Image (cartoon, rainbow, N blue to C red; front, side, top):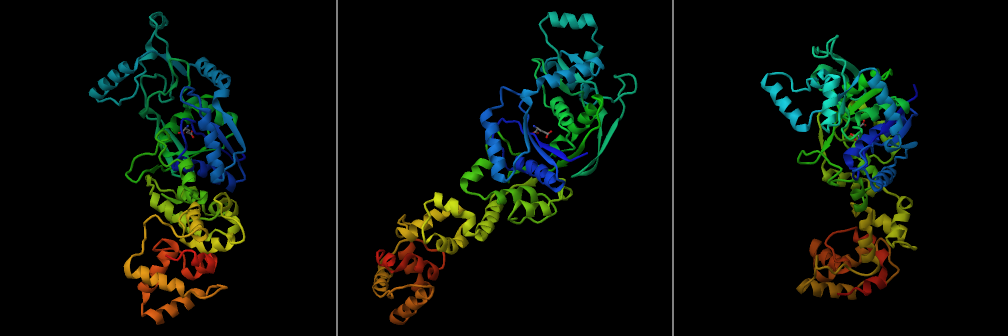
Length: 459
Ligand code: GLU
């Protein structure tokens, strides 16, 4: 069977770095096997799904370097799910239930008190035709549960029923179908929960591997049973560990925390996000991988650890810094242009500045320093003797043209003239010229600013 995978987000918010992990697991797996990657929107919940989020997800994936071969929307496929429902009902595998949430909760507590597993006891299966009609006449509409194959002949006599699979991430997995409730596939209002549409689509779309977060492991047991109930072989499965915030909370699309969009806006490199999203929580050390091809070579789903991994924004910044320091001018020309950094000095400027940047957009502030004058935001100011010294130094600046040796020439002379050394010698000049106490080598900055530029910033 040819490899086909899908990334199946519900478009109910902006995707975050944890969703990126799932998307990339699928993308890299497809790339490694010459397979197809389908972006499938789980948008059966039409109240919460929004086109705006779906569009943002496409944009965020593209930023990351993921271009789906196909995009599908579950909301356009209801007739296919309806047909599957009819098939399951005909086979007696989907049964109507009428309990309210409160009634279910009461039943659950009763079972717990009787030391029974807190699963749904299939009471609705005992309802006679007349009882159902009476409930419906009373205004109740049913929700529908899938009868799990966890019994021999009597559904009230469940027995351990193991479902096994070789998980491409976690290795051998076992789930006992007797340990779970029959899943609700269709709600009272006729809408679908994700379980059935997902299986139907995986069949219809020829999905060979379902790769998703390990919060779905138990689900997979029920879904494999559902594949079989629909007369199909189940695909292969892979469940990767999840990412949490630094304090251990799950990431949520709803809060917008660590969304890919916010990382992009801050100026993160997509490969910094991709490297971390893939390598964190695995036996590989986290490093900045420069291209998706290189990440593909390194990627092995079986390297993921079993426990969740903490996402540390500092670590992402460190990866970003490493990548930015390696970026060639050609890689960033367009982005620099958008920041107003262009012209004959632009390339030399980039070479000088990149080693000081955590983020490409931060080059903008340095471009202003080089072209307009020192930063005057009060972060670094000259006073007293240092101010006098700087004025004197500016008056004795060497004549042009300037090159990489000018700074040394200038400061050697100042050292001889004033007896100043080290920080006392250099720092007042750095502050006068840049308005900052740190930054690129002054010997590199001087030729960029030039004699006139320097003269103009005499304090
Ligand atoms: N919409 C589901 C989720 O985001 C998809 C799970 C799956 O890949 O099957 O958890």
